[in-house]
Length: 112
Image 1 (cartoon, helix red, strand yellow):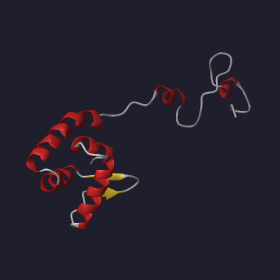
Image 2 (cartoon, helix red, strand yellow; image 1 turned 135 degrees about the vertical axis):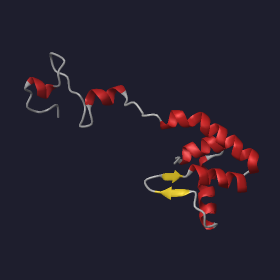
Image 3 (tube, one colour; image 1 turned 90 degrees about the vertical axis):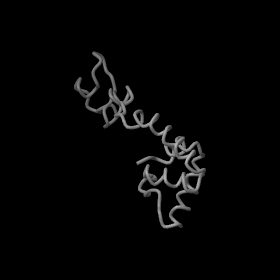
Image 4 (cartoon, one colour; image 1 turned 30 degrees about the horizontal axis):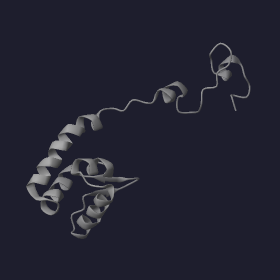
């Protein structure tokens, strides 16, 4: 599955074009993806659509080649930013003397 931004990259089209393609494909009874919190686009359906309606076999081959190039980067686990690793998911790190978060030094307000 691809996001709209990823699909736009491999198809060398604007995001808005992809939204039009999504609507067009749905009208034709062959939706390219599903909308959850964001659109998730099926790779095979997108490539079929590109071939049939957006430039033929040359456009499909170009999109497939770009997908092969980008997919390893897109599918690898993402590293958390350094500041997220430091603070965890519950809030900011509030340092006190000794370099520990204030609540570990006995502070009663938990840095709030």
